[in-house]
Image (cartoon, rainbow, N blue to C red):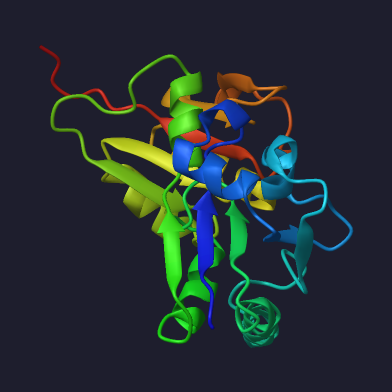
Length: 241
């Protein structure tokens, strides 16, 4: 009897921001899976660490590549296509035995999350349930102590992996901005914000809602180091009552 794969959003990083439903599923899980970088601790696994049963079966899905190959390189897509197929095979080996699998996901599973690549491959093959989580960006703008949008501001979310001219164009037409996937792209993001005339409004947030949380003006950040849990925000200035 085929069981279910659950994509469980764990929120922006602070375990206290996990939903009641996610907490229940993770605590009751016999099998959990999570993405990670080879040789590194999984961020999702770290968030859920205090909830897992001592005898839980763990499936670590280590990416074959992350930033070593350019996103547009055909070798990148080829490597990840095979990787996701292998992940599906590993998960369905358990569901075919009638065992549910909980896939731990940072933030929300359907917002720039790797789980969506499993979902497209699993849908129609096994039951899949997605549990939404507080997006990481919400944790970051809350950490700034100011609303990200006002009135009829339009919020634009940009992946920093876009080319610089596209970033400048999109930034220049935005009321409020969230820029994700920083990493080695931070210098490019700085230049684009400067060109768009927004560098003085840009705020850098690192590890929002977590221990070691850092919030400062991007213009005051002395280096270009940007870990996975970091974003740049530009708050809207729309109509206020």
